[in-house]
Length: 181
Length: 256
Image (cartoon, rainbow over all chains, first blue to last red; front, side, top):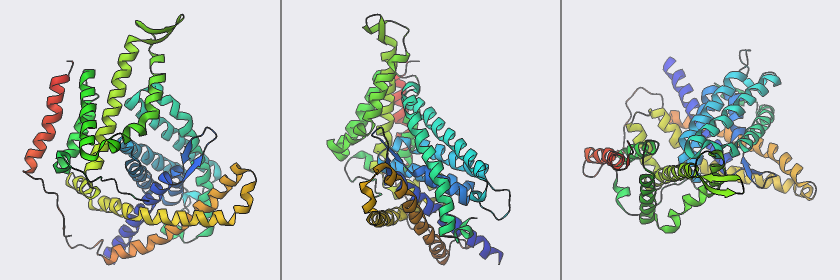
């Protein structure tokens, strides 16, 4: 029945976006990896890259953008929420589009490693560049320069771990392929 | 892990309709980028800090300042170094540390950043998330987008709890290895923990989709709405205020 098939995809898509958004929020706020310079980086980029490699551009864009926006609101950085929504949303969207597999039925994580890396690097540039521009408008371009290395480190770790985790999840939980819409 | 952002308090800010409040915050955030005298920006900062103090108490009101303190320090250190032309105010030998123009620019940047921070934070503190969602719906956000937003908030605590349990169980399994190279163990702990947490989250998706379908998602019948935003004194009055506040502010403090 066509109405049932449409309803099925809608419910699955909404459930997928909602759960992955919540995972991005948790990974942004709870999961912190200490860095050598006494700071922390969050693993939100791991989930954004993971979503892009497994579930496509729109899921990655919504989960990444909405998740980081909500995390900023909960974490007390509400002024960053709309900017994080745009930056991480664009990051997820572009990574998924570039990494998309040309083989029908495959997810992006099945693509050659070089393609995944290129997509990840583009995501890194978008993320670091986006926050530099946003920070520049908010508090000055000179001060915003200081955050570029940290953002590149966070997004770089996100890409590396995203590739590893995507392939791990595909092995550990093969039914995930049926969730990819 | 709590995902609540609303802080119960008192004052006019809590009575202001969420839709009009959102418009006011947006208008004021745009206004701070228009040509305004620095005094006007600092008046806005003072007004928002006082509003936060009245609504939630001094300790809570200072919390956004603590959150952005690091960035303020970076701004104070780095911004003057890039505006070296002009009349020198601070000099070490022949090296100009700060010029008058640099300090004026810094003044505007700091006031602007603090103003935006407090405006956004006050909006979140004084408006329940359900009202924010309804306000977005009123402005045109689709039902499905609002549903994703609501469901995400519902799932945050349970996913956080699952993650903590998974992290603890992995820590118990690898506790003997933690004596050696801490950095390596830290990194190698991440992949199994993150993979397990993601698998647990992914397993909940089909059940959530099924429960959404059982509740009628995707059917053609019109949905019923059980809660609406109500503006005390009329929505028009609230919107009039939301337009008047930034307009009067701009007219008083503009430099044009």
